[in-house]
Amino acid sequence: MRTTRPVSYAEHGMVATAHYLATGAALDVLKEGGTAVDAAICAAATMSVVLPHMIGIGGDAFWMIHDAKSNTLSALNGSGTCGKDITLDTYRGMDAIPNRGPQSAITVPGAIDSWALAHERFGTMPLTRLLAPAIRYASEGVAVTQDISRWISDDTEDFRKDPGSAGIFLKNGNAYQPGERLQQPALAKTLENIAQHGPRYFYEETAKSIVSYLKSQDGLLTVEDFQNYHAKWVKPISTNYRGFQAFQVPPPSQGIAGLMILNFLNGIDLSGLDANSPEYYNAMIQAIKWAFNKRDQYLTDPEFSDIPIEKLLDPALANAERAEWLADTKRTHENRPGGSDTTFISIADKYGNAVGLVQSLYFDFGSCVTDPGSGVLMQNRGAFFSLNPEHPNVLKPGKQSASTLMSGMLFKDGKPYMVYGTQGGEVQPQTQTSVATRVVDFGLNVQEAIDAPRVLYGRSWGDTSNKLLLESAAPEATFDALREQGHPVEPAQWPFPRMGTAQAIRLPGPWSPFFEGGADPRGEGIALGF
Image (cartoon, rainbow, N blue to C red; front, side, top):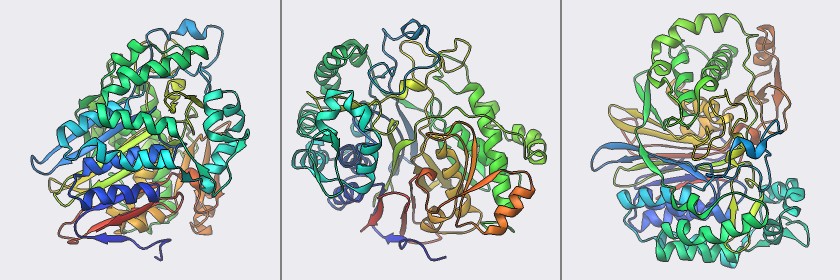
């Protein structure tokens, strides 16, 4: 198939991110001899400036890191916790936590401490070098893209309610236009302090400015909440898919849902099908419904609730229930709507290391609350907590919320084969599976797999109920056949941004001596190697 951009091939390293400036900055790090972790930190910091609606240092992160020297795979949980003074009583009389503003159960940002742990174990270059592009872009300014202008326009009313955000992201009270310069001098200073004094400076000193501003706006986080927070190393979870080992970050990440979808599909022979056949999409849709049904019964912070991970990932569970779900296409699972603005960074270096880093503010521009003193825009991940005491993801002080963030890695014969992930909330397990199956089952390269039309089941931002969307690049006959099977499928224009902005890298092996990188036409990213 003819792709929207050529697949990127390179011999010494590859970077794929959702913004061209971040890809360029991270590629420079690889060229200078840095590791994949070094490059990932550089990319994440840069994107926190140039893609502020998707990612920021006021948000969360999850990592998957393969270290070639020790031949080990590690995972990092950089998800922030609920403040000690934020309880169910805070929202007494409310049906749900507000999505925006200082009352959106703003959680402690976990990303910066996750950078610290990754850098301490696997980094080689100083943070002063890795954060330099982000500091320069924040200080000197960057061009506002069409995407950023549109998102600022959508959130203008929320920005106007917050003096800190209005002073940075609005120009004379209105959205910046494409091509105008966006400068963030306070954020530049904060990044300089982190680079010079280390990541814990953020939790010890920057926190004082953030907490002071939040309190002035009736927010509830404390300096102690920041000081007591620490990201943590966790053990990856996995399942086998047609001879590949698929890995994800464990809960509170929803990575388990992606693995369950693969378990469901593993019992269906897709090899003889066309990649855009109704049979393929029917299998995908029913697998997604089944996995989401299981996910929502359990997903939460595992330190607050027992999650039967081994049972959920046992192929016997999918084998026992697959036929029932395949036979009933009208069977549904009502998803709770959530934020979708995230970014995935995929990097592989010349040493054989590979990194998948997903970082997010949850909603576009998170809580829309920005501390003007530090320039830090705060996430609203805590808005996903439930106020129902019986719900597994009920709000509690010190708890991490169930998270849509997930980072995927496929292994073949004990070595990393592909690093892949996407932006998109509920979309993430669906798009990750779409990319993986297009490569594994249909033999597409990573750019072809990313470009291919995707299905979206569930509720996205603005939806009042579940929808089933399929990008219009799929054949009309496929739409007809799915409707005949009972699927209320609706066409979505291709490429459709709500399907996620995916990045992927396939590493060298018997299939090719080159790295193979792809980035999504649904976003502003690019894959580049050297």
